[in-house]
Length: 90
Image (cartoon, rainbow, N blue to C red; front, side, top):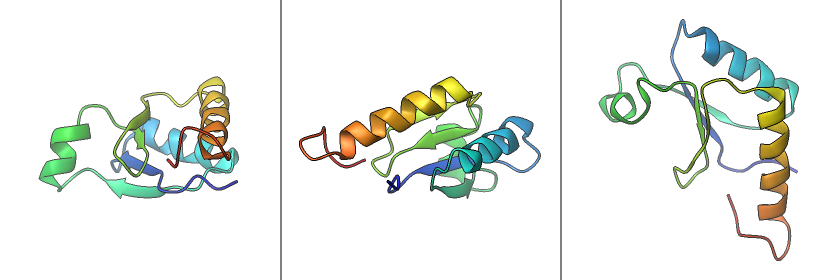
């Protein structure tokens, strides 16, 4: 099941950001990558915390190290929320 509206905020040269992208890809997450550098609003919100993964409402789902356990928990949570009778769309 796709994860609609996931956004990965990152910056060029950030090794944790590169690692987050690799792990999100490996676990089959669908997301949009957004560069923080050069965007004042993104810098203000996420500049010191990248990588940051949000849903389309801007709710922060993960930040920092995206370990396998955290990604597995996120996948389960998103599936529950998107299931009929779940907590709603992400």
